[in-house]
Amino acid sequence: MKTYNLALVGFGNVGRGLAQLLFDKQQELSADPEIAISITAVSDIHLGFASDPDGLNLSELIRLRNEKGALENLPGGKKEADNEAAITADHVDIVTELTFTNPKTGEPAISHCQLAKTHGKHAITTNKGPVALAGGRLRNEAKNIRLAFKYEGSVMSGTPVIRFAKDALAGAMISSFRGILNGTANYVLGAVEDGHSFEEAIKSAQELGYAEADPSADIGGSDVFAKVRILSGELFGYGRKTVSEQVVGLGGLFEDDVRAAPQTGKRWKLIGKGKLDDAGHAHLSVKPVLLPMSDPLAGLSGALNGVSFGTDVLGDVTVVGPGAGRIETAYALLSDILDIHRNSLPPCFAPTLKGKR
Image (tube, rainbow, N blue to C red; front, side):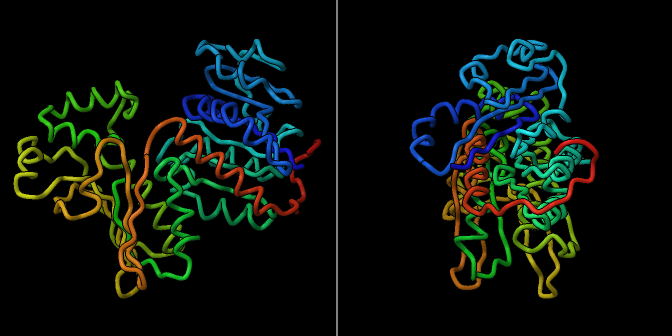
């Protein structure tokens, strides 16, 4: 049996969701004689630090109060976070990077993933920042020393859209994609269509947990564009030349126009799109688009996401699934862990830092 010990760097909604998911699936996972998964370290800027080589108690993690330094009461606990200690601990096999990331720099997530690689650890994340800005490099550097850098949850949460495109559509050339890639924006447009104001719709999205306290990335389109960049890198290649980029959010839409559209057989959606031209250059965009009701994306409501891939042999292939939610996003992390197990190779690396591995 192979045991994968996890370090969780960041313990917000997604980290707690992963602890809950592992707890709920204990019976199913224990029935597999080939794999065991344990959380052995947690570091969080607000909650502090805890570490136990034998595994932290999942029930205690799930019940942990959201109080400053709460992890101090667990084994190996301290009031202050210690991300480096969590990442470099000898007993850790996979670093789960779940911090808040600056979308302009990808930090501190990029540095955390690099530190994991240096110490011979796999890294997984649902964080868009490091993937959009350095995904290809981080993946290739890890692969070169037989480690993994995985990020299925960075696009469409738990819906395995990246894995689907690369595995299920292997052999079909994908020259374009377009999709609804932000559950908050999709929910807001639906609520406005139903008669609410943009302000009321955004407040409702926040109350339901779809939107952050600052929803500007969702409404302004930058969140979708980060996902467009990730899909472009995965489908077209991270070295592909991009000749045009356009980001337009919902700010230019009028409420009356959103409400009137269905009467004409159409519906407004915030669409992220990538396309290759005849020269093989990429064109990337995010903008509101008036879709006919016959379009498979037009019928997606609430926080549902969907992507249509343009292929040479199958035409358009559309994948639909949840694009938000803590358990759904946590599932993407679990699927990455299981994928690492299925494709595992013995690590081949030489530590570059002094001290124990």
